[in-house]
Image (cartoon, rainbow over all chains, first blue to last red; front, side, top):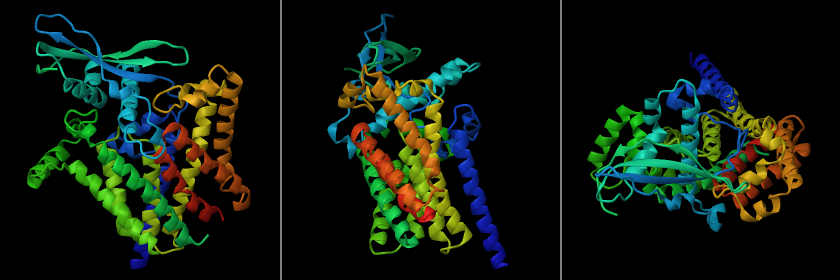
Length: 180
Length: 264
């Protein structure tokens, strides 16, 4: 019985590792990736080996926000500067800043994908994790004492052709006033 | 190469990388705070049951240490312990299992901001934990090590295929574009590539050729595969130096002793 259990366990291990390898191949191609996203959060565990392809990131991204005041006027856009700083020289060995920058890249990719996918209601975008992460982050930035709502904007810049363009603009969301 | 030595070398390289990346995550803890870009209060909205349990745990701890920081500290401790174990010439399933569970938990709780190095660590941890848990030479032991080798080879080959299907890569615009960015770029490399399409095309096609040729590694024998493996390590050193991909270096380099073991 113990030997049979060992064989079954080994077969189970081989089956799991084979399934994980097949899932990796499926997740590495844009056309089939949606099959893995059906796994929900478990899909985050499946590797996608398509580094910088087919669409390499060739843009720098900037996160800005602006406030609407009690009187209805709208303030100027303010940039959150540390998200777009140049990489430090010691990044080859110590690079904790990459986490925040990669997260912003991931959010941009997810929001773009949601916004351009057919049939996705606006509410689904607003309730998506990337949107909520960015909104929460922007809401906790300094706002002036008359602010009642805030809005964020993701801009992108191509150093290659020198263009700067808006990529994603949120709606206004209530904020609790605080001081700069 | 001796199987035990290959597994210990792989574990040691992986654990050095895990210590480094976990320390980076701990040092960047402010981004998981309530006002951070990856606020944990938002992250755990995916898991309402976990939210309730973590809230309870936080209350029970009564300290300023969040359950997320505890998870990272557990991972750091397990990585240091596993390093000590391999340094004295052994390999244990328990620290590898703890590293596997904490790395899975990290990927589920904070899926944004992690990179391919995180996924290669997952692959290594799955394969090494399986291999450490089963007797040497058994079917499951072989499967664990073959899993690491196949995934490592796929990581290059699939990336090469994805690039060859991309018009931006085929016409050579991708390298200059990537090196122009602040996140993964490098001003000297960009200056060398900008406005010189021939150089861009050469770098793009050299990358594609290198990545696709990795498909031959399991079939040509170790003697023929050496130049490709050396090139692969050089590729990751260059990626760390020029693109800041430090986590990739350790995670991918850790797969090499297992590749050598399996193909030899």
